[in-house]
Length: 510
Image (cartoon, rainbow, N blue to C red):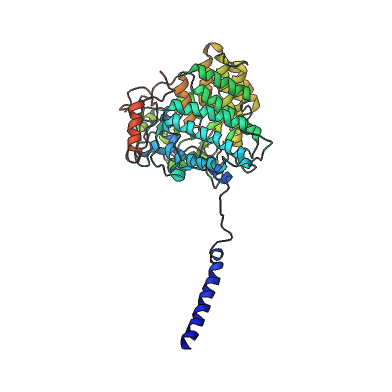
């Protein structure tokens, strides 16, 4: 009898445990936790992270002689025509930011939306943005991982193969063409997208503007394809007004990386070049008043105070290239300045502020590319009209960046009247204006300088350069590729050429 009494409580206990197990899973699930992430949030994150890293102030802008530093160390690069590698060296800036925080997110968005009939617009928007980010990467480095890029999380591929830049551009053109055509306003849109709020018309214009850019990039290496692509983009309709610009509106939470660099550790170390300042002043360009600021009489970074800043174009003095921290003080004295801290800078309280917008694809750029296409006879239309529209758009865009940088309409009209388009030197005029209009878009201004050969810059005279040619032609791969992706890196170098700054990317044909 005792055994029977012992079994009864045991059976009750087992039944009780079984009953508890029925609700065990539910009890251990957080009812407020997200079970899946809306791919639109991932897409927005990718677009925010496409803003340009501060490293563009080390290579891209000094190479095209807009902004540079006389200092070495972390700022050595285009200012001295030297490479600057390391685990977090400035040559890794675009690579790390775009692969880690842009491409991998976009690959995930594409994976999540490809088969979803209600997210076809988001899927094609992501295709367009991935094409853009990939263009920045390949223009910067040359051959890059493309088809297998971003698959580390989805497919555990941590050693992606490098694709040739030619094949990448072929696919970029295909993706932009197909994705732009596939956008459909009659299908569900994405009101939460940070770029255009789901406006399909604007997304189509962005896609066509990027298609135009991709086509014009091939003007030297494949004029036939360049013409066909530019004509297709023009027929489709590109960005023609600043209201449609591809821009990330940075804020206190998502600050402009270039603005962060200009307002923190390197605030007193980066200056507008003499060539850039002199070009604007010599041509009575009203944009100089919008771009530059000089802390008159400053003898140190601490003396670069608001009380000293002067934005009058007449007092701006750009820093000459060819000097370093040891030699620039004497040059500043020769220029009758208090110190090198007295040279003009990009105004970090306006265009270079922490929450300054990042302009990726603009009406100014698109109109100027159309001017070149018209000049070459690739599209219909008057090159002079496109040229004037491009200049006007950029001058007006400065006011969109900061109200204090607005260029008066009368000043725009006066500038255009004084500087009319002349077909005889049309390509130089157009691409020199593109150089000005792409200020702060380091990857694009560097790419178009290599493609077009304009403006006609005098090589940086700093002695001891590491390059054999006159200008840096590409940014080198991160050192990490030599340890984590050895075989694929070795293969690409055998095809593309040495991993140095003299090797040219495919479309940069001499």
